[in-house]
Image (tube, rainbow, N blue to C red; front, side, top):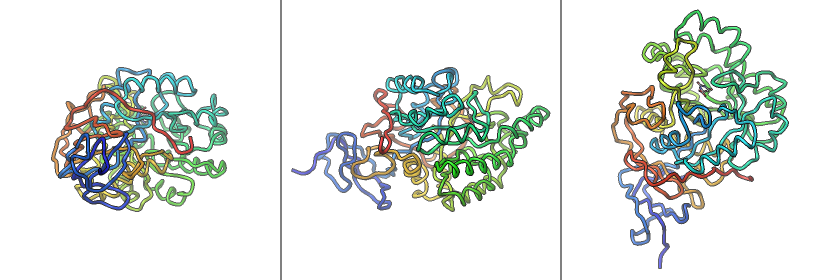
Length: 442
Ligand code: DOR
């Protein structure tokens, strides 16, 4: 008798650490147990992946699902449904919720809710602030916690750690890599009038200018080195920061978002107004080209969506009262596949940026590659499919995407999480069964 499997993903072109090749994947108990060639009779269930590519499950390490606190914008049920429709198998959620996620109570509330409604695997960040700084060493070790997140500049919500002394205290407590929103709050306050006077989001990258970002990134690198604490600098928007970060890879990992890699000012603000408003801002085409160079050079470790929905009604407020952020978890993989089709990155690099990179940064246990013993998380894609992204495909509560009407090549055809097919052909299947992401040594 040969090996028996719960599931065989058959005939796909599979991306493994060995390279890209046609193979069958055998799954038992939610884990990959063999990669090779297997007969249908060896499997309780066969997924025919002929003509498709099987990628390690895409992990989106920056989403805002707003639960609790802003159910009109998003919640865990809708956000994770959007994730699996977009081929995402796991998400890390940000702590600028209402109430802020600053203690075990808020974290456990989110985990309890997610255990009921989440379609994909998940972990939650603990906010880093003056009021919980001394407890973060214990808080960051709680099950289901992806680590600590610091906002150096104000964005949506009141989470803020703007001064070196507070940031140093946060960094002094704990060992895990700390995620950073790097915009300098003092400079934002000094320059706010630029935004008020302009009254149009075209001014967003002037108000929150390159120096605002560079200054905060330089500060956090110095503080990280002093504290001997690794950091992960989120949503980098400037070539200037990429130069600095390239010289600090021993302490800092780097994220880019699809918004900054796809849109450019002033066009995005002329076309979309405040719908294209986010923090840090979408900048000009020269800066966007610098981000792609940093991807090409290996400076960037991961791509996140920074999925941050606001309703169209909220967005219709006069700038700068309009809120910053756009949905993105569902469009992350389709846009990245389209960038690949247009020659901006290879399939190997796409996989590195969406699964292996996340694993490396955060020490995720059992995810991030297709290999024996790892979770059977697969994003199964058709590289040749031509589709148009539309608002009516969007499962987020806000119901819109800044990419409405965009034609793309490459599309997620199925999402498999721990051996269970949760999305196929744009349909969500079964019941929500997302679990906590686990981390090495915890
Ligand atoms: O544009 C943004 N929106 N940037 C952030 O850092 C937060 C986010 C949100 O929560 O709306």
